[in-house]
Structure formats: structure tokens, C-alpha cells
Amino acid sequence: MTYSSRKLYRSRNGQLLGICQGIADWRDLPVSVVRLIFIIICLATAVAPCAIIYLVAGIFMPLEPRGYYRENRRSTMDDIKDQFDDLKGRVNKMEDEATGDKESDWDKRFHGGK
Image 1 (cartoon, helix red, strand yellow):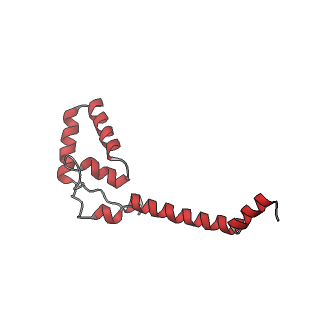
Image 2: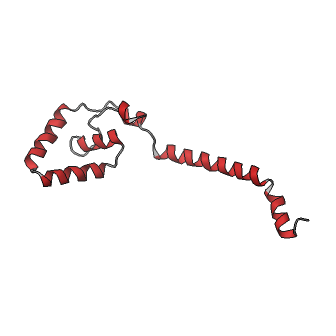
């Protein structure tokens, strides 16, 4: 799923109104990074306007539909692990085809090709 097809929602799993978690899910970023950026912006400017903007965003951003990001996320760790295992198997198969029979290869190495 591309970024352009994702929609920005408040997360149901967020800490406070789900704004930072929703932005993190929307851009596939770690939520801690989004929260840290928000805190830095609040401290660099003024806390009160940031709090007002956060509350307004909490009111007007729609709440994510149930299961939205679970169904539409690009990859989960399980997907990545499955892809890795698949690629590992393909590489092993290609190595076997390129080197031939492993048993005869070891025999050639230790017995001088006899």
C-alpha cells in the first residue's frame, strides 16, 4: 500500500487521543519518533498553542475504522519473517543448483578429485 492511498486517522491504540499513533501509522514511523518531534515542537514554540492544536486535531480527525491498519499495513514482522525465510530457501536452492551435489563436492575436495 502506498502512502498516497493511506488515510490519516486517530488511532484506537494511542496513549492520549491517538493523534501521534495515528500519524505514525499513517507514515509508517515509530510512534516514539512522532511523540518526540511533537514534544520538541511544543518546547521550541509554546506549550499552550500546541495543546490547543492537539485537542482540535483530536476533535476533527476521524477515529480509525476497526482493523483498518491491521488489514492495510504494508508489512508486519511476520510478513517480513516469511519473506526472509522464502528468500533464504530460494538462495539455498540456487546454491545447491550452482554447486551441484554437496556430498560429491566434499569428496572431491578431500580426496583430490578421485
